Length: 358
Length: 156
Image (cartoon, rainbow over all chains, first blue to last red; front, side, top):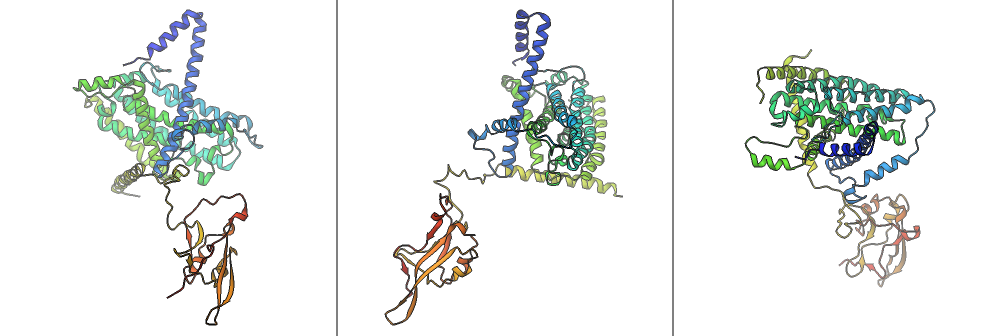
């Protein structure tokens, strides 16, 4: 299997030959940053296209099909439109916080995005509390949403932001507990270790029942965490026009929009990493030929393929279920998911202590 | 206060109905899509029979229509879209009779309400499912529906 560390080490060695040591580190920081931003933008464009196509197919339509073959250039043109649109200055807003909010959202999303192990040797931030850092970083986004709602000086925005706050705080518990369930099984919070310990079988198979329950809960809570349907009541368009980003225009709105889509990918990627083996290929014990063929598929494709399936499931939720009311949302979390999650965590500890896992 | 049993039964029935919904939408995901790729499939596009594109007068193969120029359609039209011009002629047996001269239809002001077609006592007019009506001037939307040289179909 191809190891991306070869590429990164080659770039490092080349830079060491050309530049003094202090400059090498700076250049590498900049290079990594640029690559990350490009990957982020491309990922957002791809996801917006996928969302529009999947939504259309669920509604018996074809979706974008005019710009380029199968409409694949559509989102690129939309991005250009968004970039050249005017950012409208609104009168009675708190100007500093209003302009700051989209950047907080996008920075939180970008920080979480950089933690993901994309392929073998392709990890940007990888240290011993990786998964913990990831949920901490992704939760900063809520500050941006609350600021956006507050600074807009608009009732709809504020209601949207408050709903979002209540929702995020509640569902953060479920996400944390379901991740904790998997950390109990792994015994590590480092993302690269989590992936490597799934080489002989993905955790969804190794952890059987408790891992599966944790996966389902993670997916539900992750959907709620990204403010997507059926939990999209912070921006419920039929009640609140657009919720917390009602007053935003141009690229500031674009940041919220892009961050929402990439957050969905982050949720899918973390689900892939924790439950479905990350970039590990599918190995069935005993089937040597099959395993060797699977090894030939590059690890990045394994990772992106599994994430795509997860993203599809999240979109499937959105286009199937009607939106929840705020009390139903909180009931679902506090009366159903949280008790189940606590029992499941106990079950997982029991399984690990008595070595009932594979 | 709900009982424990109700809590669990509500949980599992809810889960079942959610899964059922997801099964239905997944089925919808793979069905044939209804979108028409219009300019590309122009040659094969089949409009629905009930689609009201424009008013037309039914003519048979001998260039005869059913219109007796009674003007009921004209009276029923809410927008004054239809104007029936008729001549009064005297037949061989000395009877006075109205015959249709020109049946004028202003497509630009038509509501497609179908009151004219419903009220026609002789089923002389109908809506046909054509839909490419874009023209450059309004005058081109004013049409004469009876064909040149057509006459009333005689009843035997």
